[in-house]
Length: 209
Image (cartoon, rainbow, N blue to C red; front, side):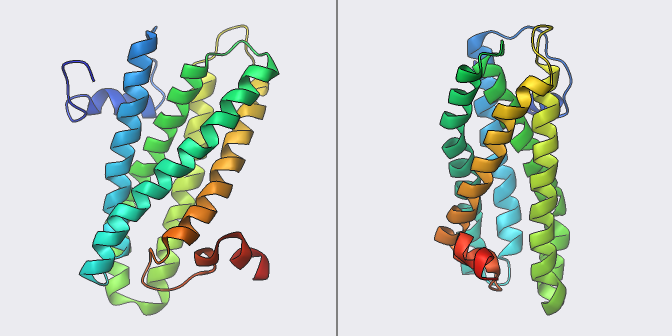
């Protein structure tokens, strides 16, 4: 970010993730905030990855690298088709605002994961039955929270010419494609958690289950 670090811009990024209005943003500023949110997200999910894999030092280090890659690649994989659908739909909405809304929503979901990481780490060390289930549950909570924040932030950035309903198609495409990509990236990165789960085999594991 211009003459700043992500750490110094953290209050701005938090306000953005919480849906607070930022006023009129230039194209370069929007891109800076979007990339800053995405980079902050990678750091936050790395904390969760380390906690979820803390059963062993090797797995904790590996998961701290794998989980940010899963989030980054899933988000970037879904962006091209999302922006294409936005363009072809003909609605009056800025692609950079959509990208910013998505990145800020992803950061919000990442904050949820980071906040839940202590309890995930504790249960992985103290409960064989609950540890893995809690880790998966926390991931689902973060995904749902991220989706809600993306929709809310995108709606708040719309103009009078754009209705909330018209944003449903591009946002729906992003969510579906990002989740589909994430499922397969989890399979490629496996193991992320100490205990095996159906998600380790990607879509095949879900369908076979």
